[in-house]
Image 1 (cartoon, rainbow, N blue to C red):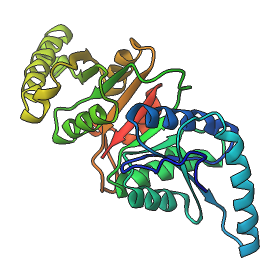
Image 2 (cartoon, rainbow, N blue to C red):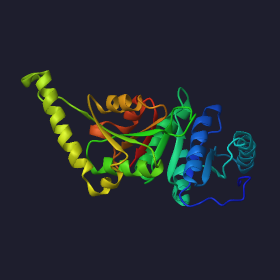
Image 3 (cartoon, helix red, strand yellow):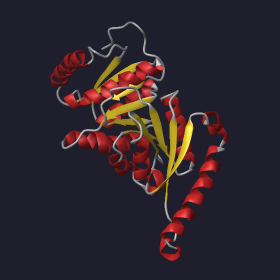
Length: 279
């Protein structure tokens, strides 16, 4: 099914995976807002349950009727993909075929969709698709007014920073690192804090001097927080009205990890704002 408008979907559209339930309105509205902000197309993907041909046809017809109701207010061109199969694999395939700029999913809770959105799909998509994954938790009342990028000063966090800056242009970026207190039991808590802060400050400066990050200096505000990565990111994001938190993941590994050894799915669960995971 195509959109009401005649404009074609451009390369690198925003792709939204939806289960068509009432809770899917937040990721759908955020995806549409991003598409409008970037001047790109929007692709809406819904995965049908498998079954006999006539059952799949009936499910597809019902999905089209629901989509008409849910997209009446969007005001942006969109295409739809309705396919039967494994939800993560269908979404991944559609995103790769369309060369999507980002895959948008919702943060459902307390039902079978939770496994799809926050467990299986996040892990599968992050490990198998080289496309950023945006988990929408908050109602998108306005465009993002700031990006909070957690960094461990690695190549992957530099890549995450660049991807986020490209996805949401022209907004301020808080580059935050949560540092530890080394040898606190030996040298004392306050001295350990000073040592940890001094090391993190030096590493932050080295990180910012990377050639690929120099063009972004006008947008970046570095911040060091005494504490774990999730606390550092949440404290920084809480200073904004409409923040986007960003994590860099390892990608293909048995236990996909994000900052400082935390599992990405666990870290994403402890951050209270929308999260962009960049492999």
